[in-house]
Length: 574
Image (cartoon, rainbow, N blue to C red; front, side):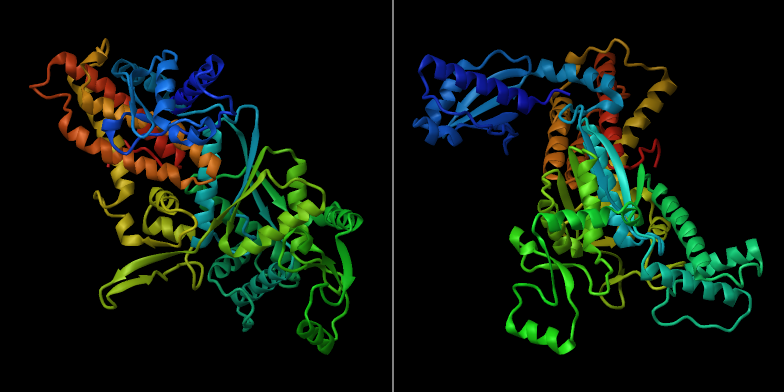
């Protein structure tokens, strides 16, 4: 897809270089200054601020803008160029060019907006990564949607993308899961046994236990917790995959943390960090103050293995291996990310909860301690999310707590059942991950313009309705003369052509919510146009009707593309 802002910037750079070659402009390195849509349409479709060059050029911005305008090469998408104080170069798009884009959009189809900035490059997005100790919660769901949307946008930018799920099926929590299921199984057999407070109390294990009894009868009575851990893990992962599939999310790879122990990667990483002078043994870290030292001595702590992470800007050193010889969770994390870098991804995106912020910084320090460049790794942090409903009794929103399966927390399945897969996808994506999110259950199922899911999808539905009616009447857009299109239709096409820029910005800043914002903006532009620009109306001449039908065909392509980038469906009827 041609990105008009980039084409305009390249042309401006050529004009500036030409002015320098002629001696009209001092020689200096010409930086990239983005051209973007101005706030008012009267100022053009793209605007370039020459003010940013004034210091380097030692000239007034207005004079620089005039030099640019005079030296611009001919561009097929430009109708006029205007210079405006204090130093803007404003571009007005050609109406003929915009009309031609209607057929270009239709021909592009599902590939509309695709870029080549990631061509021949690879990207990995690691997201969800919940241990298989229970179903996907609402908290996990936000990271799942954000991660999958980021992967879709990277693909749209031309990258070959791998979606990875990193998990740990070892450790004390998984042992407790196995023991909890064993007790639930015995309860199903009629035994009077109780779960301890630290066990998993969710009702979902009752269902798993009932299934085991149905399958094995009493045959597992003498088996230990290991058998039940394996059974729980298998069923939990099947459940997790089904839940994610219900909102159109699938992973390409599942990476088990225990493999880092099996192939010695964690100990190799520790040895490499030690060899680089960043590991030491002590009962307390080197920067400990008198109070910390006294506390350690009072508790008679044995020496542990420390990472001198303060050498890389951390606030304090971190324990890598505890005094009992067991590694902390930080060491496998470092080893995993080292392997991630070794796999050669040009971009590696991690989607994590905001409570992982400090851990992510320590991992980054660990990679530098290994002599690796952590630059390819980018982290998207998600704030908390909760499902809420308005309580007339309380006069405020209250958290929804009505899980059928998971005890005292809500699951992705519950959320989809209460709303829809599309509602979950959009509302989890529609706000910056840096902000906390209240998922208003009542609002997201409302079929009105107050509900952005309905608002965006209804734009596609309206296009589909026009096509059905045209087909019933035997009316076609074959041979449409697009010169019949008016300003309303061209206004929509102008906005739709910004999709490539939105994808580029979302990928560059790792902010997938930008696509949700853009989809809503485009729908807000479309609906009033739909009310004004009729097709199958007795007062609309046949030529104009054909052109308008072709326009709506292009609009349908745009909305379908946006919905799929967000992982949502494009329904024909609502």
